Length: 104
Image (cartoon, rainbow, N blue to C red):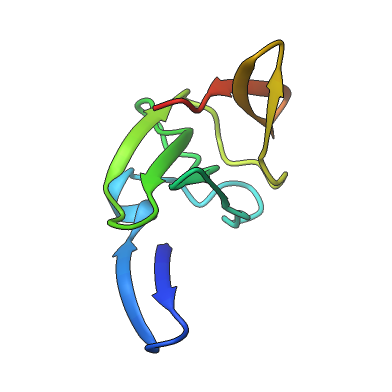
């Protein structure tokens, strides 16, 4: 479940049931993630099939901006870094390290 909650107003601004939307399997150890907010996007380790292993949501609206890979969810937190002038998101996806462009 991805949610954006205003703690000032104590209301849910948006919510996406990622398990339902992306048909995410439970996985060997269940499902959990630590999303990363970067430049107006919420980057998540979704773990869904059909190109939804990772994804980005618009932080203001919850709209899906992009999804990529068919990898199962992993339990590492994503990080964003600029290397050689290119911004990328990095995260461990069992059994590899993933680098994804986060520019869109």
